Length: 112
Length: 241
Length: 112
Image (cartoon, rainbow over all chains, first blue to last red):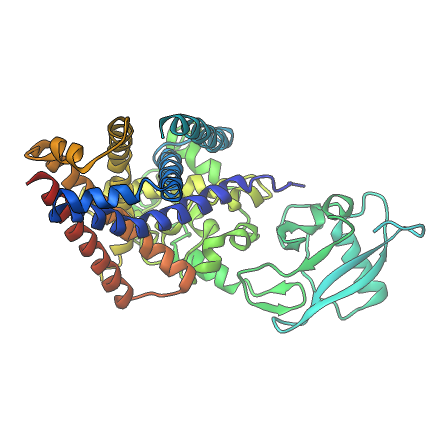
C-alpha cells in the first residue's frame, strides 16, 4: 500500500502561504519608510542610520530570504498549473525550488 | 505491539463525532490486513463495531478510512506496514460527517460530484453518426489518465482545502469534471466550466497535492485541476466566463 | 458578486505573479548592486530624482504587488479564519488601495 512520502508539496504550499502573508504585511512598512523621503534627505538618512543596526540587517536578510522563497515557490506553482507534467517531474520541480533557494541564500550571504 | 503472544493493541473510533477512541487487543497474524483485524473484532470481540467494506480485494473503495492519520483502503493495507511505533489508530474519514464508528456519510461527497457536473451529458452527436474516438487522441489520453476514479473519498479526506473551505468541490469531483471536459462526445462543457469555476471551484486548489499522495489508484487530481484552471484562464481571456 | 469573481481573482493572482517574478528579480539585483559600499539618502535620491523610467517601472511594480498581496491575504483570511463575504472583500480592497496610495506617494517622493 502507498506510503505517504509526499508531504513535500504540502510544506511547499505552507511556506508559500505564510511567506506571502509576512511579505504582504511588510509591504506597507516598506512603502512608508520610502515615503519619509518626502520629508527630505535628513529624514531618510535618519532611518537608514537606524537600519544599519545588526538586528535590522538580520531582519532585512530574513525578508529577502522570504521573498526569494516565495518567488521560487511561485515559479513552482506557475509551472504546475500552466504546463502538464508527470509525477516525477512535479516532485523534481519542488526539489529544484528548494535547491535554488539554498543557492540563493549563499549568494545573498556574500552580498549583504 | 508484537509481544510474546503475538497480539496487537488497536485504537478504534467508536460513536459519532462526539465519540472517542476505544482500545482492542487482537491476535497479530502474518500478512494480516487491517480489514482482517476489523473482521476479527466484529465477529469475536465486539459485534457492535460498524465499518464499511465490500469487495475485500481493492477494487471498490468502500473500506476507505483514516489509518494512523492517513486515508487508506484497509483491505489493501497490511497491519505490519501501517503500524507506527506500536500504535495503530483507526478513525473515520475526515471531512465527512460521522454516522457511527468508522462509517461516514458520503452524501456531501456525491453532492459535490453533481455540483461539479461530474456526469456525462449527451450532446448532438447522439442524434447523428457515432463520433469516432481513437484511444491515442490527445483529449482521450487526458480523459483516460483521470478516468479510473471509483469515488472512494481518500483524496477528499486528505485535502486540506476541503477541510478549510466547506464549499470546495474537492479533488475527486474536479478530477471527474476534467475527464468529461476532455470527452468529445459530451455536450455540457459550457455549464461544466461554469460549475468548476464558481464559488467552490478549481481556483481553490493550492497544489498541496495530498490527493496525489493518497490516491490508491495513483490518479493525479492536482494535474486535472490544473487543466481546468488553464481552460478557465482561456475562457476568461476570451470573455466567455 | 458574479460567481466567476473568484476564478478571475485567481487569474489576477497568477498573472501578477508572473509579472512580479520578473520585477522582483530586477529589484533584488538592483538593490544588491546599489547597497554595495553602504547606502545614503543622497545616493538614493541622486539615482531616482527625475528618473521617469524608474518611476514608471516602480509604479507598475507597486500596483502589481498590491493586487497580488491583497488577493493572497483574502484567500488566507478565508481559509484560516473563516471570514467571508462583502466585509472581507471591502477590507481587502481597502488594504489594496492603501498599498497603492502609499507606494505611489513614496515613488513620487523619490522621483519628483
